[in-house]
Image (tube, rainbow, N blue to C red; front, side, top):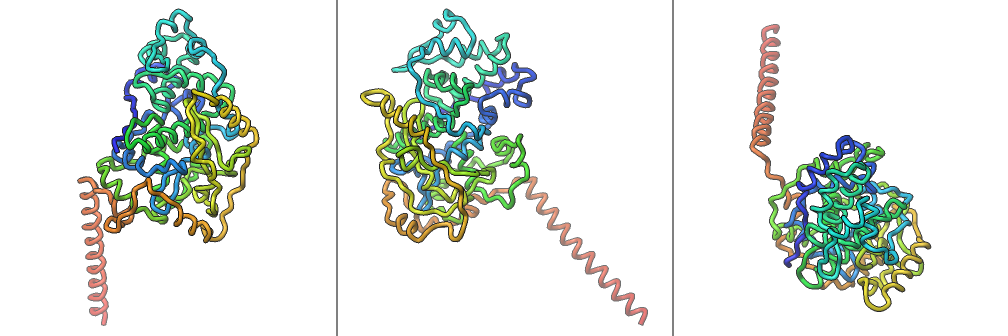
Length: 435
């Protein structure tokens, strides 16, 4: 499957970031950004082999990844934790606004004149956009430091989170961004476009992914690397999961074929069901009359069922309600889409949450039977010859320095053992002499 993440070179942000002076990544910029974890996305590397393999296991019928008998999906709670988004924002979702002109939104965000903005708006296909080059020039010299930060953050949204047009920020991105300071959470929109793009590429068998690949892979790694104990740092207000992931070395020499073999043969014991940095109190599981959670994106809408992945919250998995889930996806435009947007917006005024329940077995017998019967003919099946544990597949190849260190430790242990034996022989000789 020829699926490719749409990436912008993060090095191009470096000069602008330095120009923010005392508000750089180590200072207050992280606080000023609508999402405090946002700047760390620039340092997240995208493993293209892993991404292309992972995308083949996306199940459009259920809006989740299906690995054999295992279902997993990024949830609102997980992405809010990754991006350090305030919990109080969870119900305040983005809904496409009335037609506020792109020109006015850009003027509001950048603080530039109508003449300046008009001269830089471009048309790409059916959509209007503005180039990163134009915004970068403003971010470097704008006298208002808050505007510099806003422009820098908007650029990350348009080039990293919603990378639809290479080197440009789409007008739909500015509609979302313009309302972030009103307390709107972007997380449902981020998930919506991630799921919609995965489904589109999966159905076509190829395509260009226009969701946030960095976030998706950060989420993936959090569920596939066992953690012996949770660090106390996760309880700190300043803790950032993304910052910690950046500092964690990972292998980047694994081929797509190897990743396919790993993912085809995943077992339940291979998975870290609950991400170690997730501390959920409640699970948002449905909205209004929907049996699941509808998500409004910036270009369209889709739904997902948190009840399908209760084990990610360390709760007991039962048969989830998924009726209508496969038919809820639609793009903005055409007949009736505005009515459907209003229905979903109204449903979000009646959200339902449940406390997580971790008792007894992690699955009910009824769920096990339902999962076996469920048809998953659109995802790769497991192969017996490749059924090794994930640890066997991903055994880390030690570096020369590590090999030398291991050799030194082994020799040191042997010497210590020899010294102990010599001391014991010496003691025995003394005892013989005394006798």
